[in-house]
Image 1 (cartoon, rainbow, N blue to C red):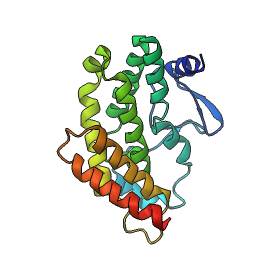
Image 2 (cartoon, rainbow, N blue to C red):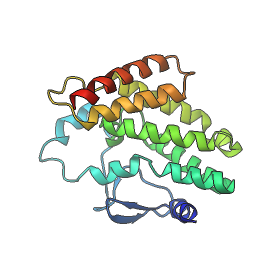
Image 3 (cartoon, one colour):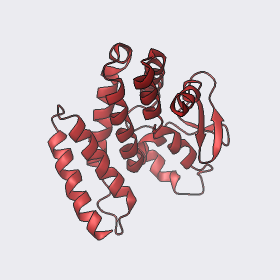
Length: 209
């Protein structure tokens, strides 16, 4: 019952993030800062790097990142498995496709942090295994899903924060994302490298941290 209740709220685009409730009537703006109602700039990430860590940044990125982690996708997936109601698959596809359309590769805050990408690709991978047999997913979202999942994982692999003097949960989250996608999607040509790289990092960092 709780799963269905939670999924219905997600279906209505009602989210609880960081202790606050946010409602997105209609199409979700994945660049909107819920507390202020303003949108983050959809700039190339190298340009964002020039002002993000300065006084020019007027908003906290955490509320936006929390939404864009998509950890609630598994709740929709559980509801779909329990009921086989295609409404949940359709909502998953709607949010997924709209996110891809609004987040061109390497543009905007949702490409700025590799930790956020790592958490998001874990969420996407787990959700896929709930919806993979849905005809709605196959028709509406399968192809853009696979393409974006590959792009995000490949980007993460090329931008690991290996040069940080002091590592923390950021690198562990990145490595876990690599392992998850590489293991669950062995069809990708780079999946073996993702798994081996991620496991090597996790083995080292588990001991060091």
